[in-house]
Image (cartoon, rainbow, N blue to C red; front, side, top):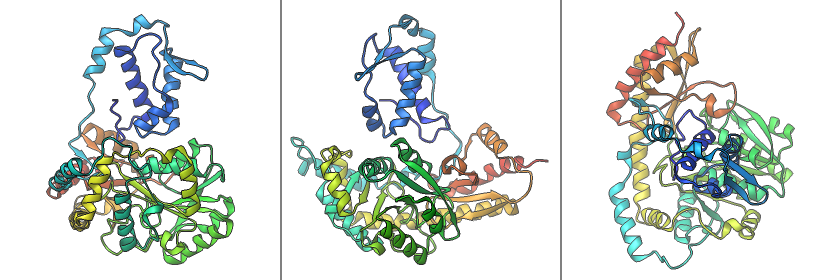
Amino acid sequence: MYILDTKSKMPLHIQLYKAIKEDIIANYKVGDKLPSIRKVATLYNLSKNTVESAYAQLYAEGYVESRSKSGYYVSELFFDSFRDESTIAHAANATPKTYRYDFFPAQLHKEDFPLKSWKRLYNKVVTDEVDFGSYPDGQGELVLREQIAAYLRSSRGVVCSAEHIIITNGFIGTMELIAKLLKERYSDFAQEMPGYHIARKIFDAYGYTVHPVGIDAQGLKVESLKETGAPIVYITPSHQYPTGVAMPIARRQQLITHMQRIGGIIIEDDYDSELAYYTRPIPSLQGLDGGSCVVYLGTFAKALSPAVRVGYMVVPEWIHALYKESYDSHFSDVSITTQLTLAAFMKEGHWERHLRRMRTLNKKKHNTMKEALLAHLGDSCKIVAEGGGLSLLIVPTKEGFDWQKLQTLAEQKGIAIYLAKERSGTAFEALRMGFGGFRLEEIDEAVRAFAKVWFMAYSA
């Protein structure tokens, strides 16, 4: 298995290329076949483009050769020179950098995971419920889909049953499945901008024409969407990524009316809706629409664990029919033990209790982060997004701020920071100050250390 760090500033295709190259040097023989692009993409939850880029680099450097309709094989060209002991030793000594303070905006502290309950339920389902002699349900275990359906109906007003829920291995898996299912009917895809770069990259990788659509104080501009003619639109209406804007009911109705009229599909990513600290989230778009033109998707990453890798989507009947006809419906991407443990966790009421605890804890962390920013950065920054999720967005308020200098200084001081533009794909720039990965008592100290490099990033 290769270790790929999604938090690293090094692109994933470069990380994968280096990992495979080191594997070839250490373990492969001339003529050995590499795993297929699809297999690597599935195994590591990567886009096909990412894997293709890594293989293309290996091919360009002569490590592998491509055989038509067969795949990639280790090349015999100068293969003896690959086995250079100094190269192998250097690779073995390479270790990921550790940071004194990490402001990753989508991270939970490991102590926040309900490990005791999870272990007990895992041991129970493995002993009593798992049939290791049969294939699991490719759509996802029925008991888990029933629990998710009940939760979504009561908490988000989603109109759904277990039949129209598909379990996936997270956001990327969900989006790739949607892109594949819709490809025969549609060719154009629209996305709010700034917006989550992964959504755009996935649909681009599947050959869609991508149309960026601007936002305002009420979210996606529906009139601008109409001008693109795109029949698919991806949005984060409850807590727009990355600006935090919430789309009001009137704008939601306007969007639904337009997409119903053209026979289009709205992909509603209910991003951060479970972690709203000031107000209750607006009911889902899918609930307003009744499920006719909205694909509703969510994950358990922000409130439970990003490591569990469980996502889901609620689809209209016609998309469900397409799914049942596809090869994707035969095998689940999520292990049966994880699914059954999560189902038991929800069925016994632990999920609701955990959510309440996480809202309370993360609201305290949110407020502590806000207080620390105001105390240590003062009027040198402005908070432009707050009130939900696991981070706040800040921007400088004074002239002469150097973002590149901030990144360089932070790296030198062992402080990991994350800029909005890196993942939003537009000129919009802000700093995403994540608090979820800290203990409550660590936040003030972390912001105090960060403040030193923040002020140094201003020109004298």
